[in-house]
Image 1 (cartoon, one colour):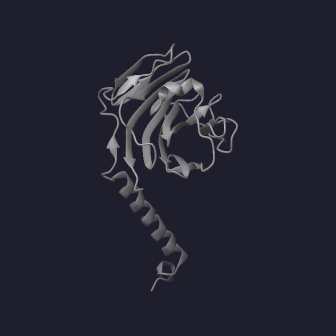
Image 2 (cartoon, helix red, strand yellow):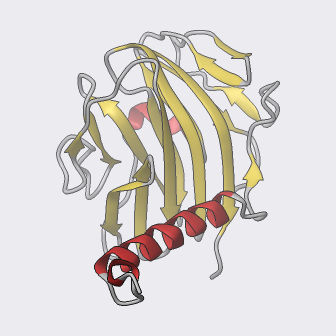
Image 3 (spheres, helix red, strand yellow):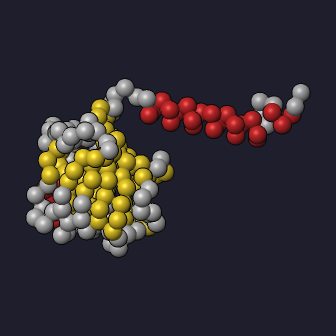
Length: 215
């Protein structure tokens, strides 16, 4: 018997963990409860957000392209959406520019919040806002180098107790919200209830979808 691959060896247990992780990831990706928010061809179900000074928005090659704005360009969902116990997922890319290429605004019970990727000069990740403090100055604030031309998978989960957020399946936010004031910055109020915006940056979006979670 090869002891290195016995049921109790560290090598076997590590292999088993990788298999379980891969199986779980595949199951999540194939979950039939995911519902598309973008048909890949049109902006059906969305409207261009009237920020004032916004750039053009077009659908091209299965992507929603947000052109440079002065300062924000974005889209807002024009349909019903749950307020809690849900996940929303998409892929986003900074095509050109130096600020946030994905400001995802979403409902949190009777309020809203935004998950920011690449803000404040290009690297800030976090929620805007927690107790009146935005993504650059609260406990969710982190920093990440984002490469232009690279797709990043974004996922946000909202439950009555928490907001969780992932980038490329790595947890970046795990925020307890019980007793906390959750809000958005005034600049993105027009993104409610669901919206994605970019700040003085050309961005691309694809694979937008959501699923409701068991209560």
